[in-house]
Amino acid sequence: MASEIVQKLVAAHQGGHRVLVEASELQAMSRAQALSIQGEVVSALSVPVVGWKVAALPDGDLISAPIVESRLQWSPASISPAIFGLGGVECEIAFRFGKEPVPGKNGFAREHIIEAIGGVCAAVEVVDSRWTTTFSTPRNAMIADLLSNGALVVGSVNSNWRDVAFEALRARLVINRITICQGTGGHPDGDLIGLLVMLANDLRKRGLALRPGEFVTTGSYTGFHTANPGDEIVAEFDGFASVSVNFNSFENSGEIYALR
Image (cartoon, rainbow, N blue to C red; front, side):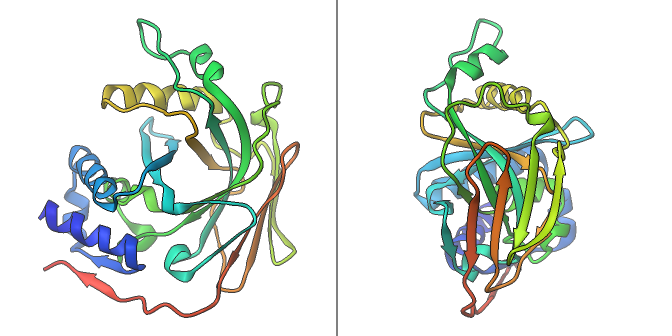
């Protein structure tokens, strides 16, 4: 079944379709199975990994997934329904690595990560799901589906970032010139460097690494919202160039692949 799931997820990534699996099967998926499927999907897509998305959840769980080159765009961007899918949008801060971080004998510490960061930018993460369960998908099944990443739209990278107080950063989400959400320090985990340290150590245990040029996006400052075909979405953060993405309005078939 795992190989069939991989095939269907790959087809969904390539064609904007959704995969139907029994909810009980998704619920039963283990973390090891999810990570194995995640890796096989990325390998089968045959496009480079250009970044990661990561989150530390309230229960202490660290979850992450690769972002592939076909899903990364620079602002201003325009994307199709096959890419934005369900249209979830989040305003995030992304870090770009200038070099591969080098661990100490006990793994990565803050200084190793800070030294390797080349710059920081604002970003819009577009959130979609390749499962028909959409945003009600169990956690491990989301991990298998690259953590529901539809796209990552990044802005100009700011190399003068070390004095930024990420825990008190002011963010604003604007859709069609209307402010949908704004606030100060809205990220659930203000210690974004600490989050990167956790990610680097977790990847190291799995035989993976953060590479030069890769982005890591670190979660939403404005919560989860949805946008519609034809909408313009803008993320604004104090001290960073704004990021914009347009959702094209032409139709998509929305065919569903079922697993029997």
